[in-house]
Amino acid sequence: MLHKRRIVTVLLGLGLANGLCAAAREEKSIRDLEGFPNFEAPIVEHAKDGGYKLNFEKKGLTSLDGLGKVNIDPENVTSLNFGENEILNIPEGTFSAFGNLRYLYLGRNQLMHIPGALAVLSNLQVLNLSQNQIVAVETYPLEKLKRLESLFLYCNDIEYVDPTLVFSLASKGSCTYFRYITLSQNCINKEHEKELLQAFTAGREESSVKLCLQNQQERPRIQDRNRNTKSAKK
Image 1 (cartoon, helix red, strand yellow):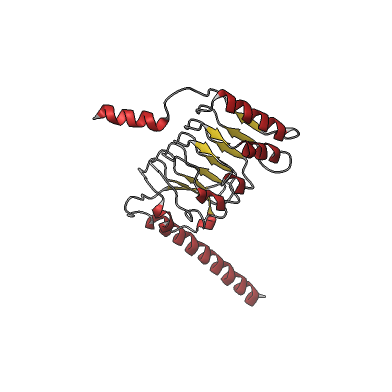
Image 2: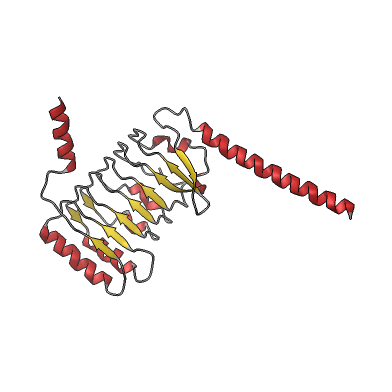
């Protein structure tokens, strides 16, 4: 009996030691993020779902080229925040290792289109692309996001949205996860807005999906306003 107790005690001790070592490695990985040029270490938090939330907000990023240098297992990352940077483009393959990502915030950047790199995020639930310079919303890559619940596209330069995408998202609500899309404060004209509402209504029927199209404005595009601001400063 004493011999068995010793074995149990040793096993428990080894388990605790392994746990401490794993935690130490994770902390070291987080510390190792520091020092990468043009890719400052993010704020790292534990998410409620057991994964990690990486916050790169206001880091002055113009690209995500350094994301591969982050020494945290991408499969354990469930939330990424790149808000309020200067990101212009996201290359294909950027998110290929982030198979469990559920929340992606890319608001307040300078994206002019919805990056095709998002197509691999099959578990993504919330996508925020608000306050960029996006002009058009096509079916791809959003059609690939099978578990998407909410899509935020307000305050862009959007003039055109593929009606088949709106119909598809609206109809998804009856059998899958999708619940909400906002396209408010863009540059969609009245005629196209009517077309989108018809597509949405036709697809919605038995679902509870919500579409927000309010406050479309006849105004200069965001990119034009930014250009004028820069010229004024000169």
